[in-house]
Length: 181
Image (cartoon, rainbow, N blue to C red):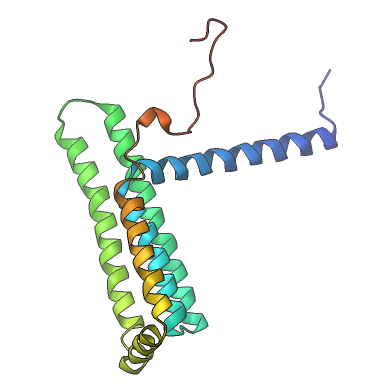
């Protein structure tokens, strides 16, 4: 006798599993933002470059290039975090192969960041448009105040956001048993 699950129930279970997978993925991203300073640097640069791109007046294709770079950069940093966590799980002692894998993963992020800078220089190298951005900033002092506040917020986000205890990170907390342990 086969136990067939009705189609409506299968749909509900499938949606639940999909929801859980998105939840766990978002937990991975939020934990990485919380614990990885370099990811916070990349996120800060994403915001600053986006704002500069708005002032610079990027075209649609230029925005598409930036969005692809943003995605690749964040993906590289998240992969680096995952590789380092797995390497740390493999051994707590000094190991040459673990060091090679961690260094190679970090090197991949460095290469992606370097290529992003090159593309950024190419995208934002029009002198006339740079002068227009500078003129806009100079003619609106409020923008300078916003920029200053934003820089202070960026320093806090990069250097202090993850400075709290690891136990404060809301990430898949272990369920307590009946004894409260």
